[in-house]
Length: 53
Length: 356
Image 1 (tube, helix red, strand yellow):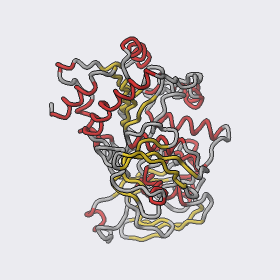
Image 2: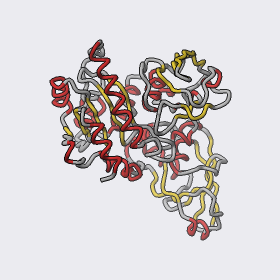
Image 3: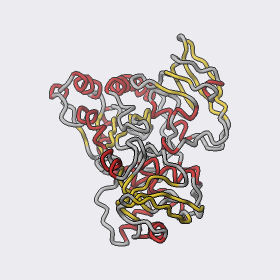
């Protein structure tokens, strides 16, 4: 019934898995905790929604 | 790991990054985006202010408006937006938070014994629609969420998404004097436009009945302001552009059956041209609260395995989703419909009143 997300995977695969270690990006899963962290660091938030249906 | 992902990692490094795959805990009173999408990103302040929305698609290609270049550029550019905002913050008015899982429609499903494994983004749309319909707050035009920039006559660049690549003659944008090469700066309540998602948000927030919309753009280094004159029904899109949206399954009327397109060999076997539209009826909705739809189709004589070749005189559907969107957006419940199916090599004309 729903379209497959397969076609966006090439883009997502470069975005969401482990990124190069030298940048040490951490992907949080708890948005509330991430907002608190962003406030402490005065950093902007990047919130990615990826539906896995 | 390609160059693009290294650039992305570098651009994302100043951010606190969050990945959400289940909407249940997300405060949907504040975090709004096009919930029909399978991929979207918000660039925001911790106080809830959303700087930009990223994630758009074309009618045929889910990734048609995603690009690494545009995303990396957006991450870089938004750092300036964040710095500027921090000098003069204006947090959004505090609305009572509503976690998606607490939407009344989902709570009713849970109380009814249904286990909700994952709240997909589109489920938020479905739940909000059900609650609005129940409270008689639903208007049919509400289905035209997050209108494409094409609704005002704009085509934007995939890699620099606030850059105009085409202006449709006679459109609101054309009448306002927009040209190819112009760079959108602000639109409606979106005070900084950097993405197609930003444009869609501004259009989404503009009422259906609005007659004008303020636009700021840059041409040759100079900023200009124009008012877009919006035509009647300006948010409505043709069914072929709506077909990808899972929200269409909420709409009425509906055929009461569906299935999958058949290939050239199967078409040849039953004497259809290769280019002809045809789909095999894999299911007839004879279950649940929509069972009346499938039962009407069955009463007309439809059987699983039949191949639909035309409906209400139309046979040039681009796809099965297009067929469903066309039925819901252009037909009327109770309308007398004639449809043609192939059963083996037999061509049958069936008739019913289109179910609500």
